[in-house]
Amino acid sequence: MSKQTLPESAKKAKEAPERNAQSTQPARGRPYRRQTARVEERRDGKPLIFGVGKQWSRRRKEKIQQRAFWSFVVAAFIAVVGVLGYAYYNINYGIPGEPLVTVNGHQVPQSLFRKLNFYLAQDLSNQLAAVSAQEAAAQALANSTDPVKQQQGQQELYTAQQEQQVFQAQYDLPSVGNTSEEDLADDVLIQEQIPILESQGVPASRLEASNQEITASLQAFKKALPTTVTYSQFLSSAGMTDDDVRQLVAILIRHDNMDAYQQSLVQTTMPQVHASDIETTTKQDAAKILSQLQGVSAADLPTEFAKLAKRDSKDVNTKSKGGDLGWIVSGDTTTESPAALWLFAPARKVGDLSQAINVGGGIYKIFYISAIDPHRPVSAAEVTTLQGEAFTHWVSLLKSLPQTTISDVDSTKQINPNNFPSTLPSSAPSSGGTGG
Image 1 (tube, rainbow, N blue to C red):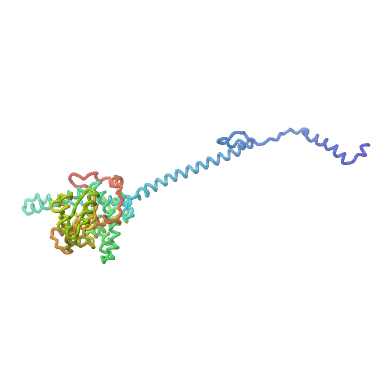
Image 2 (cartoon, helix red, strand yellow):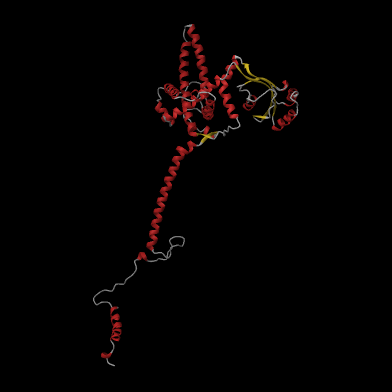
């Protein structure tokens, strides 16, 4: 068979390898270029971290490293901002907002305690300065050659010196701190009692602090400031605003108003009870004595009570008298508050025998009522004493109620120097006045 007779398909098949063979040769006059992969796309076989990433290309690992770096930078920035933000919040809001004491679930914040310390310290400083000025004037009068003026000056000097001693005794860190804590805790109870007293017919305006009272008190405070200290400077040094000071003044006015109201309740005739007591130093001893008394008839109870009091009572003042306490007037602060709550309860009647009452200090007392007089006369001296103790007695009774819950005071905050002006001494000055 000749070439001419070959089928066309066979010719193409024979010619194809020849063309392919020629195409693999480099073209004449043109350099040969070998095609390779880019270096960054190669796999170097090195892990990225912890054996991971051997199969990844260099470029991919570089991208991951860059992302990790910037993620770390952003996370670090956020962490720093977070720490600074937390520190700022903690210093300005967290720590100041921590409670100094909690009264019936109401927290008294450390910040309010600090502000009242600054106000009371400045107020005491103002009063000391005023008394010092009075003392100097009285001394000049006492040095007069006029006998009448000398006597007057001596009297005024004595009064000024007495007042100065009182203020000096209060002008130190512990005293100011105790006063602030008591005022703030008492204010919680006062505000709780105002609606109750109002429902009993006492006008709230008689107890609450009015804007007029607050403004008048604040003006007096400003006027008493030393000439070297402006009100703005006081606010700046104390870290307070005018609204803060008005809030503090309102607390003090409520206290004074409640004090005045409680004093008004003291009359020339007051409820009184004639009672006897048996004092024990353990709850078990009290329970044993009480079981003996509860088995005695009402007619024989006074005699048996006196007998056991003489034999077992630890009260050295009444033991020899069969436990006789005499007449006790309502509001007498010498009577422990838990005992007073029982003795003057509205339902009390002659012949009542109390349970063992824990009066504090590990002392338990049992009381017997032999007489009650709702309008027994009170001497003028007793009236004065009762009026002076009226608020203290009232608030003590409130604190003794079973439903009243008061936490322990945070003593660390109470004596923290940061909560007091730096000019306030750690102890009372021995003599002389002090500036603001």
